[in-house]
Amino acid sequence: MSLAPHRPALAILAFLLLALVLSACAPAAATPTAVPPTKAAAALPAAPTAAPTVAPTKAAAPAPTPAPTAPAQTAFPLTLTDGAGKSVTIAKAPATIVSLAPNITEILFALGVGDRVVGDTPYCDYPAPAKNVKKVVGMDQRANKEEIARLAPDLVLAGSITNTDDVTALNGLKLTVFTLGVPMSGPKNVDDVLADIETVGKLVGKSDAAKQLTADLKKRVDAVAAKARPAAKPRVFYELDATEPTKPFTPGPGSFIDSLITLAGGANVAADAKMPWAQLSSEEIVKKDPEIIVLGDSKYGVAADQVLKRVGWSSITAVKKNAIYPIDDDLISRAGPRVVDGLEALAKILHPELFK
Image 1 (tube, rainbow, N blue to C red):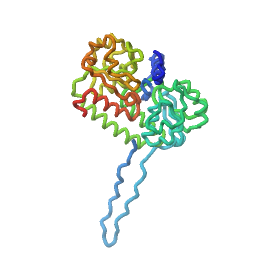
Image 2 (cartoon, rainbow, N blue to C red):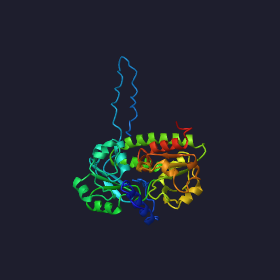
Image 3 (tube, helix red, strand yellow):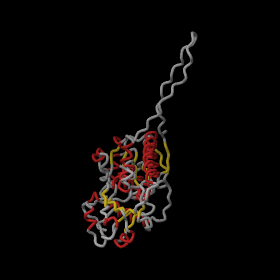
Image 4 (cartoon, helix red, strand yellow):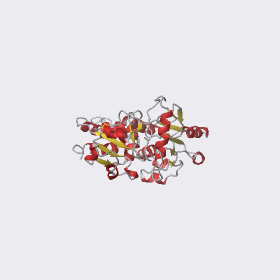
């Protein structure tokens, strides 16, 4: 697969695909939170209840109402086991953080600690302030260890796609490094993502904010699932990367996107693929006859009219009906708070009659 200049994030896809092959037997030690291969928010404590007042009499005045207390947050020092199975101790709430993956950056900003992020990756482009953070990772996803050491962050948060050699090197520099997700793997469902948001909340002293955020996200997920569950399940082909149009990449079983398609009320045509991130030949896609095609690679210039012209695809139901839709794949592939936006966007494509 060639890495076209206008698709820099394909480096992530190529890297992760190779890693998945090499680590097919790796144990699932912890809830994964990787950014799936791609081309590429605060808790409010319950209102304090006043202590019951004593009925006023000539001899007694009402008991004073106690002042509300601050919500309980993470107690430091904190020791947690990360996705790589390493026990990591956080001495105090980190004031400076380096993020080595876009989904982690988005989680940090959603928890209200974006101002603590002193280093991130060139793919960290949301929210807007993340673009202005110093880039300490190359386009090839390799960390600039010297620059990270110079920043001397209190905490380095590595993603599951972070090169394990980089993690080892950063640990060797006596930095506190926590890997979010099983290395070279990825989240399998929304619950995995919500669990990882809560883990980050603990690490940065924002446990309550994380719990409130995940509760809100879970309500939205449940609302989509409840509407879509009784509906007919259209056959869906989700295109990740058509650099090779005759053999595009697509999410298979065990992938996070496969679970989103199911939640949104669709049937993934690649659900029987041999790996989570697979390439299907044109012949296989024609045989599976998707009723809807979703273009996760639309951000990189792939459009419906191009799909309509692909050799041999004219017999596909989705092509006949022109049921080919672009989607913002950042919402789908980044395992952070915006995945629920992506789920809702996908549900509107699959079931416009249910989701206006």
